[in-house]
Image (cartoon, rainbow, N blue to C red; front, side, top):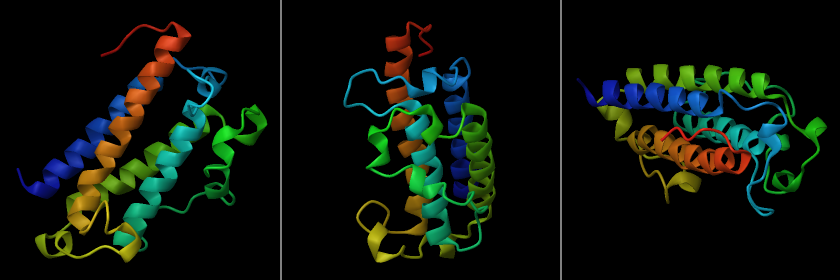
Length: 163
């Protein structure tokens, strides 16, 4: 197995874990906050889509599908405080966008060459992902952190524990 195969496999498996974690959430569940200051799952999933699209696009422009018009603006630090269901896409739309973005990320990771993995990222990303290879490594970790937060929401909703 090559490093790029491993990165692509980690991205694919991690995406499946996210979908499994949210499988029994309703649209209303997606807006549940386990504590008043915590982000709900709808905002977090949109944030993950934006972050992944932005990171891969910065590493390789054109590698990611375009997000719907206005999508990025729905998932900012300011919108994280909104609880209005009308402010966010429904769960099915968010998961479809996540699957589309994650599929493009897997394809991108699988196609990376060693020289591309060594390339530096834009300056704004240097702190957390100094090279393109670090971007491929960071995305499953970022998603896993949010999966952990989704597990807390599951507990607050009284859903069965998965892990």
